[in-house]
Length: 476
Image (cartoon, rainbow, N blue to C red; front, side, top):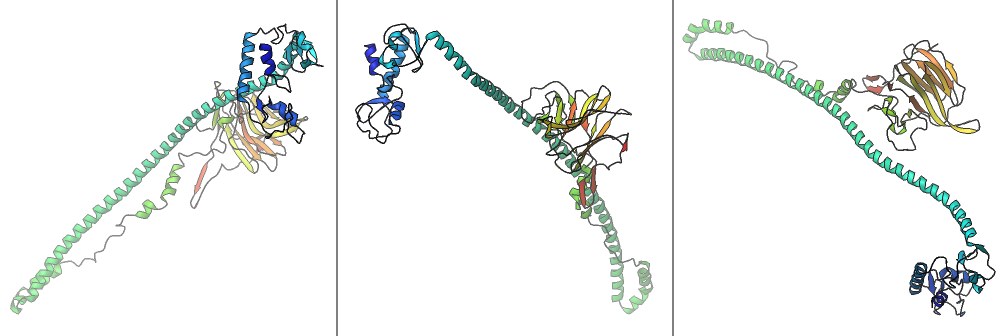
């Protein structure tokens, strides 16, 4: 019965157990792929068995037959030994290369396997395992890559939240300082306004009291004199001398006036208020021409809160984002330069191992593309000029460098380094720059390398940031 059922569940086209069976309008069933292949290139869609024309080009699935086939295969696989043929109960010694399935010697002689090619089970298994292993290897590598990228994405997402919270705290701290400054300035200006109000109010009170006394004295003299004028002639004449003396004794003061400057000087308190506050704020405000980008920093580097200083420290678990520098122990600026002239000063102090320069787009060297890197290196008390476009060059150093100025003239193709304290040139690279150049800093020392702030110049009617005046450079 098992053999009979197996034959009944075979597709009349491929002689295999039905795969995704469909049923035609004539009630015959076939594998979906088999009937589609049978119809390919034919104008009439006929049943492969009875030649009756099918009314549908996309016949419906035969779910009952599909479930029956799946149940039969599952039961056969669980009930019959793997090494015995389910049709002939013989050992599976051969592998049909055409049907890609193990068969017994009786199957080989059957009509179903006519003119097919066979191999011994062990050889076929070895060949197919090798082929499958070969095809599996790229998938394993791809899976490993996906898992690594997934881990990096998870790490990036977690680090992004840490960055956001850290940046939020720093923003709040900076605004807290600004708020404290503004509140203090507000209190000082309101206090000055109230002092002026109190002072001028006191002055006006004193002025009004003096005027009241003068008015009272004059009023008394005027009333007495007016009464004398209304008296009888004899009485008037008898008191005339006293009345004249009373009038003459009252001094004629200057005409009273409201004193100048009595009102609040609003122009002093409100005029250019924000500008005047800004002038005072410049004592607590700094401007750096180069801001370091933590997303490009080597995991072993530690950046200051204001992103202007870098030191070498303990490696941190940072994600492998595309922006992170390919050069170890280095960090790039957040913005690059693709034109114009730019200068920035770096305090190297007692740091014994550092590099300063610029990193650019790829350039062709020796038939290969490399990142363009032009820099000076200080290590083992030696100063060296290095770049991907020139040969290494030792540089003389008459004294220990403390501050280095980097000056880029993009259009003229010049990158210059100078000793800021000695006002002397160290080295100049000449190259036709292309693309974007990013300021580059390298260190393996725990002492900081710091980008110095530029001086802020504020002028009336035209407030602006300006760097220090350029100095003439002397050659070493």
